[in-house]
Length: 158
Image (cartoon, rainbow, N blue to C red):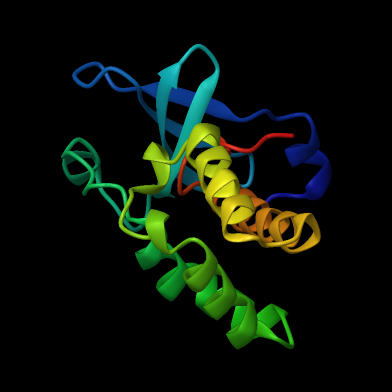
């Protein structure tokens, strides 16, 4: 094990794959290695730890992006159960309120989709308070997905 002082002046190192454009291996001073996909200038998504996936597997195409419904039932539900008292109600409310978006891949949901949803809810007679509460919930859901690297940026930044 290296002394902490020796690690302090070291920096992370990034190795770019010569065969697959955008595939980056980041090595941290402590020795941790992770694969990243760089898709635009400075825009990147964490893929997986390098001890879980070797180079040949990292070069293979990633599976299709999960849908909002799959994300809500999987990763988000597990996190909500561990972090929220009313996790069942929150996940159920998101599934009920945004039923029209459940089959859409996360990276295909846009701010326009949410605005169309808002217009339909207003036409149904829901109060602005209820609509805004649901939008705050879906924003939090998207922000969590971005934090986990499920997709690069939230469709509802403001």
